[in-house]
Length: 353
Image (cartoon, rainbow, N blue to C red; front, side, top):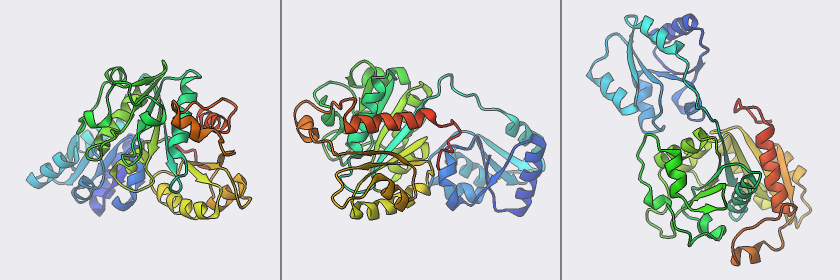
């Protein structure tokens, strides 16, 4: 469990109680908690840490606020702000704390997978690979949800040629927290084939993209339904990007085979690693300087998922009917490699090489 406590007395108490409940502790500072916040089974924090997390981290379930003595009005206020389910005092409530820590959270009946695709530089082709991966998964067949979380893009519905298909876009979805029905969501979204549903950004500027709360609710709905959730993610930092990276089981970094792209991708990869270490690399041709995928992987110190040749017919395909990658095309082969990587890894979320 994740422990964010500075007070020595409280820290001593939680260590003793965790030993009694046979729970392992991961003690970190608030500044280092972001990449563990969403995946930890339970979070225990004190009032100081709760105040710091309130505006920096998204609300989540199974949060315990621990107090040194009976909680006062200030502790109850911060507990409400951070969404704590339990406010417990030590030593008075240690038996209750043991019980809370001993609870095993119920796992959903179905457990899907979340893949985030990020460009290492501008124009890397992340949106195209995300869409190709979703299309390939749907053809296997796998129930697939493709999320467009980059509000500054042209829209994944346009890329897929389904911009005229009626259905829900992000601008029509208002979620400030809580859960959303996966069945109702799929029924409301435009489809490409039988297995793929797409949630795209609108083509107008203001309010075109999702909020962090909406991205979290939709992604978790897809995961709990057993879907493969593929997210096209902006390379620029922000609440939405950070939320997707936190939720992802695998982050795929797409990098053109050029020196300038490698330099830009190095900056992006370092920032991503601080939030999710489970990265893989897809290197895209052409390579005017002769850089190979293995060279780029060595420079960035990332595992290579695929190295793909340039897709010669891609531009014309996108202008006339939308993306339709062939199974043996460079894009199709790269998408298969991403899916094979997802399928072959353990479910511990510790996939990084």
